[in-house]
Structure formats: C-alpha cells, structure tokens
Length: 166
Ligand code: ROI
Image 1 (tube, rainbow, N blue to C red):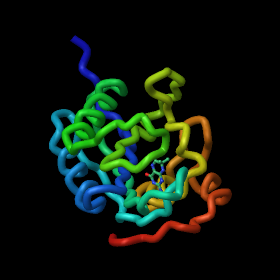
Image 2 (cartoon, rainbow, N blue to C red; image 1 turned 30 degrees about the vertical axis):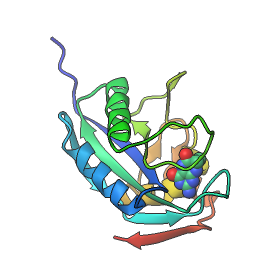
Image 3 (tube, protein in one colour; image 1 turned 90 degrees about the horizontal axis):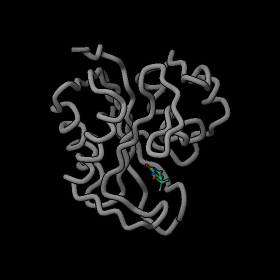
Image 4 (cartoon, rainbow, N blue to C red; image 1 turned 90 degrees about the vertical axis):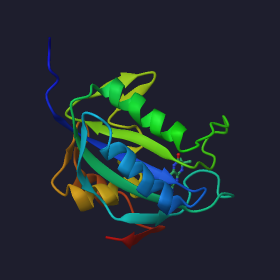
C-alpha cells in the first residue's frame, strides 16, 4: 500500500450570492473538517469587484492553505462536493454569479494541464482577488511554473480589492 505523503495545497474561495461572507466561513469549516485535510492558514476576507460580467454583486474572496494526504483529483472532488452541498447551482452561464466557488490553485509543485484540472490554476497569475490573499498567508511563495508570487503581484494592481477582516 502506498501512503500519500502530506503536501501543501492552496485553495481559492469565492462567493457573491446568499450571504457571501457566511458561505466562505462555512466552506472553510467544511474543508478543514474533511478527512485527510487540515488547515494551515486562512487569509482575511476581501471584497472584490466582479471579474467578468459586471451586472452581478461584488464577491467575497479568501485563500486557504491546507496540508493534505489526498491526491490532486481526490482533493478536487472534495471541493466540488462542498460546493454542491452549499447549494451551488451550475447554470452553465460562463462567469455568472455563484454561491460558492472553490478553486484548487496550487498543489505542491505539480504542473498539470488536464481537461478537468489545470495546476497551477490558469486564473492565478492575473487575479488580484487570488494573489493578494495568497501574499498575506505565503509571502515567500514560489508559484510552480510562474516564479515568485511577489513578481506576479508587481503586474497586478490591487484596484477593486478591499480587505474586510484579518
Ligand atoms: N470575480 C471576483 N471578483 N471573484 C471571484 O471569485 C470570481 N469568480 C469567478 C468569476 C466569475 C470569474 N469572477 C470573479 O468565477
């Protein structure tokens, strides 16, 4: 039997429907309570302007780091199960409002381009609502394939992002 060793993964959390702050807090608890996942760090909550269609409410975003024994696709399935449990309805509308979005941002040093999972997450390098919360919990992070987080931040204005709580 092979025993998966513990690796560090980063998860992005976002919501703009049905009490977004509470959605994020509930998701944090659900993730941390999942077997073979333990929380390492959790950023502040941030309010962010919607990326994509503007006729939707502002988002609340946060980033979490976890230690996990789950393989990347197992972790992805757990995150999708939590999204579904918290009432996420997939409308098929691209970039529309959502009750809960859990993105697997980084999994250890893995770089992967699979139809259902891209690692690191393809949106990571240019999303202020991902990069600034990440910096808060992992300022020295080197993003696999992209380099130091600080270099990505230099090209990503903080405009539209407001820290809510620490
Ligand atoms: N915009 C913001 N600000 N935050 C998100 O989490 C977010 N998630 C999305 C899209 C629709 C791209 N826009 C977002 O999936």
